[in-house]
Every structure is written in structure tokens, then in C-alpha cells.
Length: 147
Image (cartoon, rainbow, N blue to C red):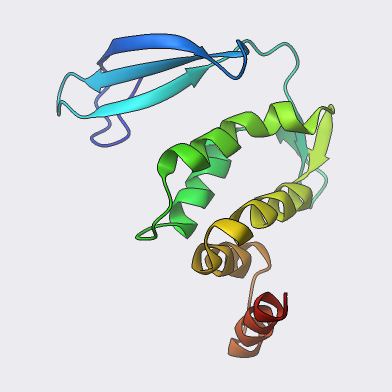
């Protein structure tokens, strides 16, 4: 398992325990290079959730891609990484279907971020909705204020 901080390939497991009502194993790891700790979740995956892209391509859902987008949106914001990680890695279980459109993933992520942190919500929305002008930002902020 690569370290998310220094990208070193080796880490040791500090502790393991069941998570998500037994649906996953939560492992606390320590990087052998930089010494920092991080958490990984391992789960059995029988049939992957397929994501239908805007151009019609299909690919397996990757919670790391969703987490990366959430982390970018919440950078320097008071949002705990564990909250984002739980959403990203629990996403597939919550969907309960064989495939989902990429736009639907974006909508669900925005609905998740909105009550947590409005700035992170706007950041995520600006990328997801591809804001191309200041007016689009203002329109989204007004919509956020109006409720």
C-alpha cells in the first residue's frame, strides 16, 4: 500500500478492525519511510459498480477518484478527511445498483458537501458544473443562500 504523503511503497499495519457493519476491514497503517499514519479500507467486491461517462464509455467505479475530488474541494477547509473517506468508500454500497452515470455521482457528492461546508460545495460545483463565468459562480452562491 503506497503512502498518500510520500508515495513510498511500504507500510506496516498498526491495527485492523471491522468497519461498515462487517462489510469492510479498516486498517491503520504507518509508512516505513516517513513514519506518518494513514487509514485504508478493504472490502470484498463481487461485481463492481460501473460508471457511465458522458461520452458513453463505461468504467469501474473508483472511490479514490471521488475522494480525490472531495479532498481538492475541501482543501484548507475544516472538514475531516475521515468524513470524506467514509462517503467515498461507502458510496458503492449506498447506491445498490449495477451502474450509475458520472453526472449522478457529481450530484450526490454535491448533496453530501452542501450541509458540511458551503465553500467546499461551491468549489466542487465549479468543477462539476464547469463554471465558465463569474455570473455562474454568483448564480450558484445565490442559490445556496436562498436555500
